Image 1: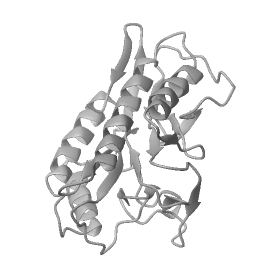
Image 2 (image 1 turned 45 degrees about the vertical axis):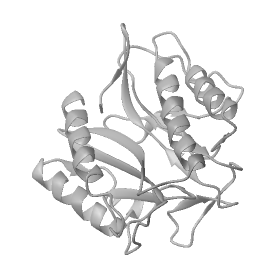
Image 3 (image 1 turned 120 degrees about the horizontal axis):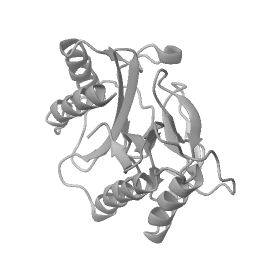
Length: 235
């Protein structure tokens, strides 16, 4: 998974360079597919429960699972990219939100805060802690900044399968969840929104967006719980 994580990070750096005004989200998916083939890994998402692409591209009010299309990016957009790969039988998963051209201060803050929420969540991925500790840390950062946390989408375990136990909420559900043990590999992924956290699924049956059209940002890393603390495998 360390090796897979390094490959996934390199693929992200290549895709990132393609994010420009006028580029379609379909083009970004094509770049992802080309790199997946180049590195001789497999897509975790393509064909998963019928998902039709390798890359999830979620723009502005879209939270996650956006299907790549002929939609062209314009200045002021923010785009969340989510990509998983399978390397030698093991999955790793990563997401990041990017600015397109010049974005407004609210979007800038939203990206910054969501990244900070991820960092704080990861810091709690320690032996002896509970899933709830990760969730609380993420929620605290988001709500202190005046934003809300998506309730109905969560992080998860990752390894032999792209989605495994435990479920990792991004807010305090009132339950401790499993205790964290050395060797666990977790996909920690806060999804933070500008306004209300309620969501809807669009007509394509995949893209999840905020009901009130408030903007949303998404960051994710695959993290290993070690005796020395959390290790990010997808950096």
